[in-house]
Image 1 (tube, rainbow, N blue to C red):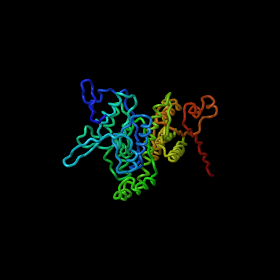
Image 2 (cartoon, helix red, strand yellow):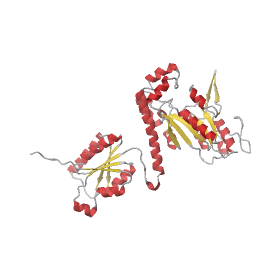
Image 3 (spheres, rainbow, N blue to C red):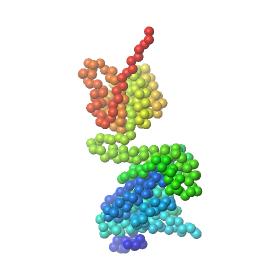
Image 4 (cartoon, helix red, strand yellow):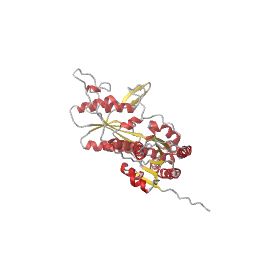
Length: 394
């Protein structure tokens, strides 16, 4: 069927991005994003590979927008897939082109009326800013229209285009990225795949002319494609997807259980002098694991702290902040329950506590804090630190 065919209701209304609801979607389309640390890692190539695999399975696949940037391997990989022609925008003596969302909707929705196979559209460069005069400003907004029509979308983007990372990327690379994608697009995606290569491999591809043309290679190596930049961007990409996977895992686990990918350390302090020792041990653990540090003091609602005790807790809070940690203070008569609640709220994976200060008789009667925590905590490591014995010299 040609791209210019109008499919409408009984009244022959034309089908475009403003009237796709004439055929209400049975479901919202699924969105899969291929993300990488920089241009040239192979995001588009990987997306096209998966498109071919689905086509072989009998699924209707079209390319909504392809940016090869002159890369022969990418262009060759697109062969055999239907590519929707771009829409033309005359600008004086120039003619600009961009993705034709209306043509994509007509092509996919026309087919879906006669077949039950899902539709899949491959769309490059999610962060792209559309040509002035387009119905929408950003390409991700076009993708949302296509998804709302019940059509699945595979798209690509680089991590530096994520809105919340803009300032950090500017500090790392010295480049302020103008084209950005809201974080909610990543949050709402059904699947995110990191297309990853080492910084050394990416630099080799650049030198071989597989990313940019020859005149731009050295400039890129001296600026954005410096090894230290690529290492930092690679870590950002991997961390972003790990965070996304963790959020989905937490949301999907049954019975309120949670599963963490990143380590998070909680140090439980009290009015006992060994709290400072615990904090230092916890800070070393957090630094070794490259994990955020939390410090918790549970106040007993039935007693007031002495001046010395208050000063001690203030010292712990100050030390926690020196270690770039977060100090938490809660009031609860049940210390074990309070620790367990904080651990769940902040997704703690490692807890540091001191050895029990109770006598053997008290532990037999009421049980130790350690015993209670072992019963309450699931999938959390518990570190029990013995108090240092100070020997005074004569």
